[in-house]
Length: 153
Image (cartoon, rainbow, N blue to C red; front, side):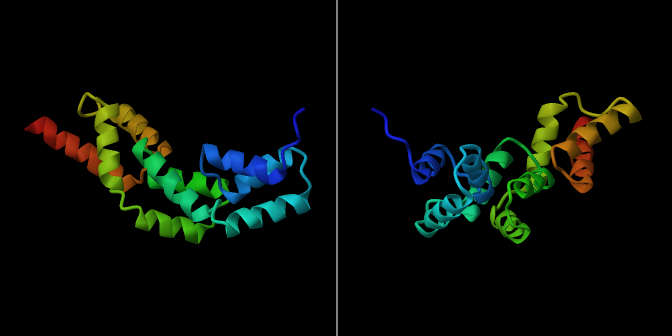
């Protein structure tokens, strides 16, 4: 006979697989038709026990996305969508130690093997691609200029 899992067991099982933001856990527990009161009780308990932490989630998320060559703007938007407080995001981004310009340059070189864009249309296409990955215009300009300098050498 299988016994019904408690809301706490379900939440701990989800956290065992990967870090979750509070909002993600709340959503997943609601999908399982758990009452709002039980959800709030479980989330408070998990946070008090240190099993769920939006700070830890944000740090892990930033590390993971940076290793996949996503830029800070994209990462910030994804964290906001997952219910992370903007101040917490700013703090976690600042403390991450990531060199966003270098991440952008490496990704640009890997993505666009031929050096300079052939024309304005190709340059615009590359800029849009890099912006969608979350890099700012300054990083994009530096990436393109460094490739142009490499090509001249």
